[in-house]
Image (tube, rainbow, N blue to C red; front, side, top):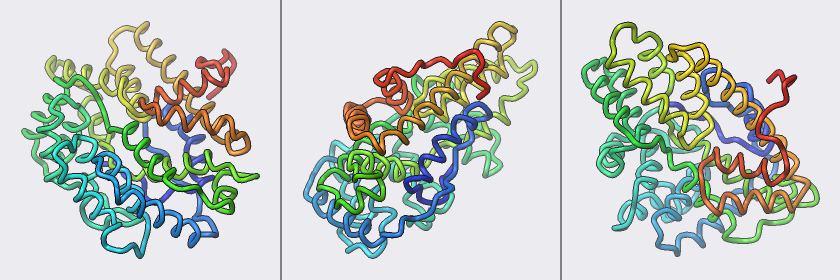
Length: 342
């Protein structure tokens, strides 16, 4: 399972987004933070405490799961406002769905700002029941089986992933939920200026706060899939499974999944024209991701643009669809110019 090792703060998030333009052109490795915590940590912590207190009064499972994601990085919270408390409440509700269980995957080991690389197996079993057609769930099981050295279980999990109909980490649902939590109260002007840029752009600040926390969430490790699928040889069953998994990832809900899926499709393609098509799609994705990062950076000094970004998140969708929608809203082409190097 891939983890982002530490919290991404304002410029760390932007640096990671810009770096992703290069990362998605390679193997789909998750970008890491190069930022540092802001100086006014106590102001941020107090703001997060206050918005969590408001959210504690709500009863929707996804909103509580979003609060759990935000609470995870906050220290010295009262017991009722902790990650585990919000998560337990969300899981206890009868309409708790797969997004809640996805957050629960991280309920293992150290659950603070430096989460351990582990997975909650009970949450994984629940996801297998709640979302049996989600290839991302079975790739988590695939990776776990490989770590145990259980080749038979790994092949079963890969076969289940190949039979899926989607690849979802519930990114859009959870980003919206965390963003709604961060918007529960007006942000203090000093904090809005620090996170959102001068003259205190609260829209940009809340987006960056939400995006930074969502990057905490577990995601399937993609390197094991590449290792399994890089050379299927004469194994027609393995090739078919890998091809289907690559297709699902390429239409998955995150940029990293799409990049990895396109890269795997390119590797598995048997015709030159198909390989060239996948390579062109990867190049376009790298361009889109880079341009999206540019727009997010610009939004810190453009409240109208930041408000549009927040609106797109609240309307729902995947990371990919939000990215494309923002580029179209700002008139940025979604295909790179011929001379763009990437």
